[in-house]
Image (cartoon, rainbow, N blue to C red; front, side):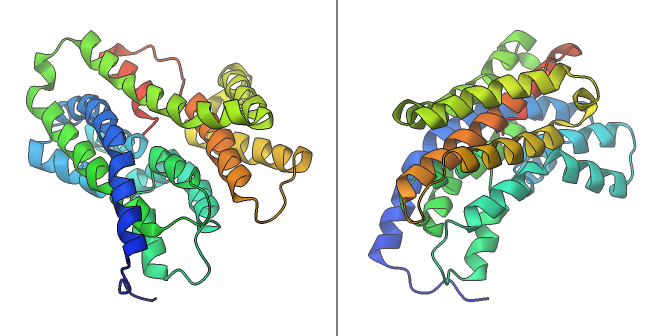
Length: 281
């Protein structure tokens, strides 16, 4: 599997870059996971349990599904299946990111990066030119993971003190980060911009269209991402080795589909209203 030896100055710089880029993500996670903490509190979790839940499962859609099943006294098998469906889009992101590692990258690095592969960390990683250094992802995790777990615990402790409107407003912060990830490459490359816009429109249509509107958000994201990415590759092929354009395409088209797929109308109460934004994590 390889090991973690061979840390160089280049890895150190990548680690520092990751920490720098991960700080705004961590702040966004702190706000979003706060509302997730309220859901955890409602099913009887204490702050330590909520912190561990978010520390070991940094994926809000899966966590929220787990909390919902806890409230309904669901089985562990049901929880595993629902979590797999809710987080299925990470299968695509893992496949895409695996192609950006340098040949010979040890399997242990791939596994550790996959542990905390979120939409935002994926976005900033593939937006970098050249091969992705695993230490860059590690650096991004340093502020992101504790903020996510800490925000959940904080939401359990003081969540009910804050007005529901304020909690829902905090959850909007993550959408701003998505825009910050996809807008710059969309402005530099018209093809990327066109497919980002198309992904939003297609995701909105999938939300209302017969049959597909009944699919889970994760399933819709996978179908749209594969379809739009394949169409973009056919219409605008990129020569092998053109890492800058490939990076922009990955961050833009896939990020746009994921961000758009999370804009789902909610009609049930303040905590569930926040879930539309929480799913973006």
